[in-house]
Image (tube, rainbow, N blue to C red; front, side, top):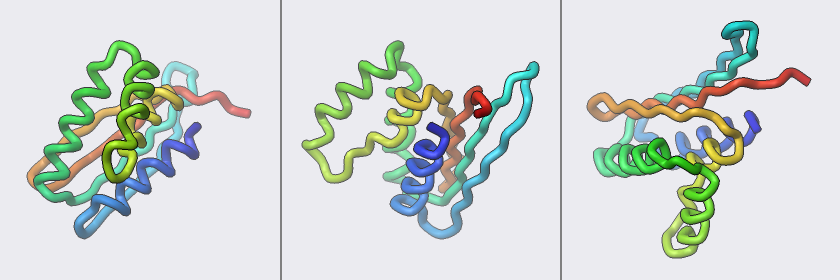
Length: 117
């Protein structure tokens, strides 16, 4: 699931970045539990920053990520691009998402426990 999360976040960088963009991955231990953190940072248009904030608010406030994913999936045929990447990360990978904006920059972080194979 981490590969899917990295792919979705990298795809967002390619689609929505205006200028510099970065993606970082960190694996660490928190109370003897392996935890992964994937972070992106990019410049974005004011319109994209507004849309990202709205989507994050909807995703982060959802009590049931899978139910929201199903609703968003059903509606995805009505617009260009599915815009399902972030909800997929929360619903399928079970990662916690956070988003911050600062001027024209967008930072997205996906974090969660991982099990070594």
